[in-house]
Length: 252
Ligand SMILES: [Zn+2]
Image 1 (cartoon, helix red, strand yellow):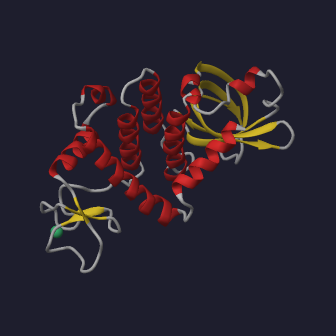
Image 2: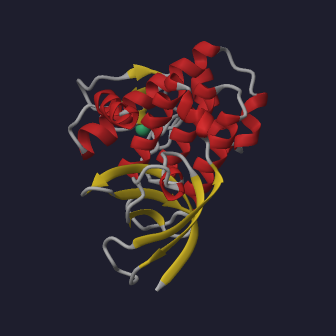
């Protein structure tokens, strides 16, 4: 059976002499791994449609439950080439892509995560505050996959709380907090920005006037939460090291 949808390439790895296994975030099927026959031949247009971050209209062939459907067509809608050429930005995007690969289960949902990634890549390409867009992306990806940290109100009883417990993924009030667990204080401004991010549409981000240290503080909290909740608990490999390795592979 032939399926048609739109996809954004997140990852590809060589398979045999000239083939590729491509992981794509699609509008209708969520994350999906596809087999691409011979795209690595020199000058192949099919090959350039499978570069990381490329947004394309794709068709693949396979039964509904086929483990590795075959990609038969990929027509580029937006190449996002300029994002691949800006190394430090590309490294930051690769980190967000790595998070996507870890938290989204294969072949579920799709539409919302796809729309979030596409709008983030568009905004990054048009310029503006890259760090803030990627922070917005990570927060919403965590929300969509059920991993978002809880700030503002105690994760157990709902009272106002300002101390964040990394191991619990939430702030806890003095009555509920466990003894002896490490925690860090959350500034009210940080919590306000976090809840704004959760409510805001991506188009609201460029107008956001926030001191950079607040964005940085929230980014540190979110990265620590990702490292503990997603990396340590779901997978023991270190996040930044893995990103560097992946980026090195892309550059080869
Ligand atoms: Zn409480």
